[in-house]
Length: 231
Ligand SMILES: O=C[C@H](O)COP(=O)(O)O
Image (cartoon, rainbow, N blue to C red; front, side):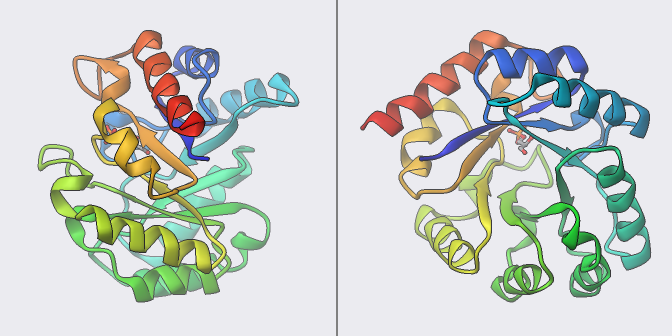
């Protein structure tokens, strides 16, 4: 059963995503890149709101920002986000720098926070790095796109290769996700690959990913995912 990750830019959008039935509410500032980060004070407010939702609430993830792969900087940013109370912390595996060294630097944090390595379809996904993330204690791995102007997930990686990623990451014990300018029309084929969740931002907004969150669009994606579950 494939879940629904909805990226949100404000506390109001967070509540709308919950209303629309998101399984993971993903705190992200789309105006600052693929994994643009919320300010730490705002993350604390969001984590407090989320705790108040209680049992049965969607899960909560937060991004650390688009950062070069410098181990100390990535570790410090991930620790700061984890300390705000967001249970899932997403960090990008960018092509620059040493991703493996970053994973090692994050090993201690992976014991107290659920870290998600976000690989980028338009920068290449190295299976050895997926395996390294699992060995370093990461909770999950997903594929997204870094450059939101250069095509969606499926223009960079064919469906069979996405299926291979899902199977191999799951075999390593990782939670798996797919994203990257996905639309409602992508849901059937991608959900059939069995990822734990599909992630959306642009498709949830009026006027592109930095536009206003549309609860109707989010409900429509929720319905599309539910239809897959029922099939
Ligand atoms: O984590 C998922 C992303 O926020 C997806 O954003 P996008 O649909 O605009 O590519």
